[in-house]
Image (cartoon, rainbow, N blue to C red; front, side, top):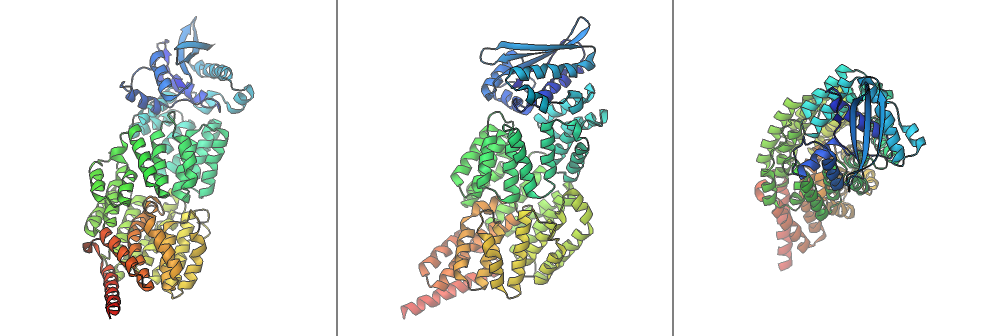
Amino acid sequence: MVVGDLRNLTGQPVLDESLEQAFRISLEQSRYVNVLSDLKVRDTLALMKREPEATLDRETASEIALRDGARAVILPTVAEVGGRVRVSAEVIDPHTQTTVYAESADGVGAGSALASIDDVTGELREKLGEAISSIQQTSSPLPEVSTPNLDALKAYALGNRNRAQGKDRDALGFYQRAVELDPKFALAWLAKGQMYGKLGDLPASRREMEQANALRSRLSAREQYLLDANLAIFGPVEPQLQRWRQMIQTYPDSHAAQFGLAQQGMFYANEYAGGLAPAKAASVPQYERRAHAVYLQGMLNLGLERYADAERAFKDADAGNPKFRTRMYDQIYPAAVKRDWARVDSMMALRKGSGVASDDLSLPYHRMLFAIDRGDWSAAAEAAQAASMQARKVEPLIAGRGAMLRADALDAIGERASKAELESRLQSRLADIREHRSELQAAFPNYDDLLALQVGYIAARIGSRPMLERVLAQVDAAKIVGYPLMTDMREVLLAESDRLAGKPGQAVARLKALSTGADASFPVHVALLRAARAADDEGTARQQADWVATHRGRAYVEMGLDYLTSMLNVADSTLALLDQAELSQEEGASDAVARSRRAFDAAWPRKGWTPSIARRVDALDRASDKAKGAGSR
């Protein structure tokens, strides 16, 4: 349904936004009625070439309803009649713009309006076909699930309006004003938590969510589901996903829940195929984040190596939200996967950022990522330095530490620092994590372990078993149970330790069963490839080399441990071509060696070869020359 602008005939301005917001809150308690969000309405107004502040009268609201597939329009009115305050609402057929029916309720004084709205929306919901038992089960009085303070309700409504217009900081200010006016306004605390999360301030997001949770009895049943799902993000993965599933079972048309299930499943559990259905369910015209849901389909298809489907989804998302052309980066991945660097460069030239500092950390990160994939270590280092400086300035606790570790990883794979220097750096990083453990855990449970695992993966990269053992001793294995990508990484580090200790067969055994699952992380396959080669298990090594070389979509899109693994993944997808050539050389398959060498040379020109890569290529060439010489004799 579309809720039109409130006609306020009382002369009391405080009732303007506050009662319109109250209508939305009251109606949204229903499992039967979905209200088109203010953000979606403003987007549709833009497509209609109307101003964002255009009045949602009978005609305009009806046109929006027809465009977005809403079945009805509600036009609310508040007026003074005979010394009493009357709240009324008409239900409009958007096709004919005629009133189907109307309801009203009277009360004494402006404060009576909220109770009147409850009466009116209850009658409307019943006439719309909702069972009385459902209304009674899902509904609580508006003052209890919002606020009895009309000024606070107006501030909250203005926060939502600014949020819909992309004015995040202004929205946050209005939400703050709402909780100052009514400290028990749980919805405003929840909105503050969501806004801080969007701005990248996880400690503040969690703090505000916990405050909302302390006031959960003042939330509607639907909003309690939403709060629980948001709070679950700070815990193990399966309960997160279960919260969204529960919300979907109760509110099947909750597009936010469908989107949350698909997004969280992909980010934290590598659920790509399983995420497509809920992502599609969220990709409907009525959802204000439809473009984001379609974009998510693109990311999921990338993870499934369906590049054409991914590109179609990204184009569709662009059409629905032109801002994506300058703010989002995953849509460049299909070109990068195919190593179409001319197209990547032209698309990156259009990226101007959003103006939100925390969001714009993605720009230097992606410059680094694409530079790594083409073997341009100087450009990658320049981008990594910019990313570290920006991250430390924006949010040093989490973003700053993550960016510094990514710079360390770059120096490891690009061989820009000695093993001794990197070991010294990693030792300092590990000590810093221990020192700030309580702060990191307050921001996000197990974040200290996540950072430590990153240190371990870099240590494995440079072949430092002592550093690996320190990391494994510091990571609490019991605490990371329930976090699939973290437990995967711990298994990877244990296997790498075995390999470096001269027990590659043991490493293969540890990883082989893990690698068969569709949700196994990219580093599992990479570590298994290294272990199998060390164990002379040519069959397993060949299988894993082929997997790593051909799953470039996964290499890019897999979130892993806060994006650190992505940069290693894309490098490994190219190095796997060299593994293929070496394995073919061992098999005496000269044609296959030549094919893999050509693919590797095209991916990483000689100027991008590190010393260790140059040694491997030289060894291949010597072996090939020797084989040719033997053949000629």
